[in-house]
Image (cartoon, rainbow, N blue to C red; front, side, top):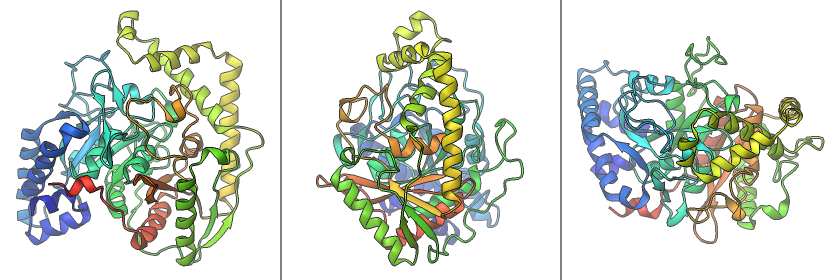
Length: 473
């Protein structure tokens, strides 16, 4: 029973809580048993606090026994939070030897606060590369996190610890952050659902080094679980200056309506990604997934935005490199010596960018956003690959032998950090080596619920599989 609880979707788990057929204590013990079984191989956690988790579970169990006293629809569900998110009483190291291991850790970021208020059981903090600088998860502080589908492959990043944990039941829910794809990359590589919400719908604090490129969102084994999480975490907080103070959307409203009659654009290359850079297995799997939407009654049109010669990869690079240049200015030369050489190199690139290059990138970001707004005015949704490739070996900074300073190897995800639109990834098949492939689902601003609804329609036809490793307990 405990193994089943660990891999059970959160929405099914809470049904058992309500019926008193299982308890938060049993669910937490099941998750911790999986930590014991798998974390040694995967290296997904930077901090674990089983004693605190059990205290939270016992408190939740009492609420469920009282009936009607639960704090939310995910009260008692075991969850993990990425290292990058401030969490009171737990270390937030940013994956960096240059941070103070003693804290103090006295503040909850808005998402951590909402999850506490909702009664979830926080198991611990998951690994991230240093300051989330790359789309894989390794650091000088914590080492490399492996992919649960194949040890020796990357879990992706920068939220790779959370996806590796979630995929094998080391927590029923997970929180990640996304500045150029850092929720969607690891979810694509590890075979999970992940949502990058509309920027600021899930409040962010402190202000990220990547500014409005940064988003925070759910990583789950089912789409419904992500919608339930959004009903908890996507609530206003005055610490985020870009948030909507009146945002009370119910992400489960209309969730089961399907996609019949929706007008959906399919763009296999998003108008600028070189076709030869897209793995053939990825292209075929995504095309097959698009056909599923057609069978579900959607009107599919193959179409791509015209970015008028602007390359989102170059625009994103200018933003993030200049941002990390500013970030690293706050560290002494001694502290910088402790940092990932790739992060230092990126900062050096950013410091060499002139004012004209940075301001041009700002203006081009605005222009690309306007183009996407006009494109999405014609369509309800846009479908693309999530990643041009599947998971490659650990301890590589990027695909294709790149150093990670150029983030252009993840073009489909980074575009929608520039535009701030909601974008999700859902598994849509496996490559010839049995590694997961992701389909990206995008919509217009604040249409996050529609993205979830579309993903749920696809999931009903193509359920999300667990990695074989998850059954080895």
